[in-house]
Image 1 (cartoon, rainbow, N blue to C red):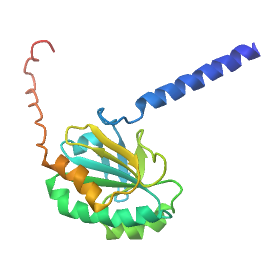
Image 2: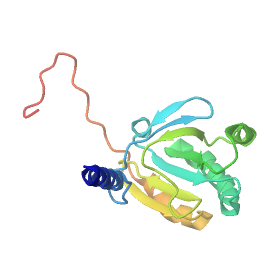
Image 3: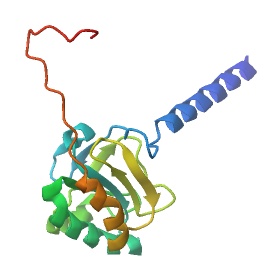
Length: 180
C-alpha cells in the first residue's frame, strides 16, 4: 500500500512538472497570458496590451547590469511609448521589499510590478527580458541586459510592424458567422 502511494505521488509530481514545462513561454509561439498589478494598483493582462510591443523585464536591486539597464529602458519607454511600446519592470523576490522600491518607482514612468501571475520567471539570472510582438508572439526570452544597440536591433523593427487588425465584434443578437 505504501509503495503504491509513493508511486502515485511520484507520478503526480512528474505530471505537474510536465504541465509546468508545457506552459513555459517558448520563443516563436503565442505568448502565454499573464496578469500583473502595478505599484499604482493598476491591473494589466496581456490582452490589455494587444497590438503593443511589450518588454517584461525581471531585475533585482543588487544586480549591477540591472541598474544600468533600467535607466535605458526608461529612456526608451519615454521615446517609444507613443508608438505602442510597453515595459513592465518585475523586481525578483530576492530584491528589496516593495516599500523600499516605491521611491525609485515614483521617479520612473515604467510601471513597476507588485504582483505577477503567469509562467514568466527570471531564466538563468537577472536581468531577464521577454519581448512580445504586436501580434502577441513571444520573440525573445533571454537572461542578460539590453544595451542601446541590441535594443534598436530587436525592438525598433517590431515597432515598425503594423498593428494587427481586430475583427469587428458581432452586434448583439446578430446571427453567428457560418461555421461558428
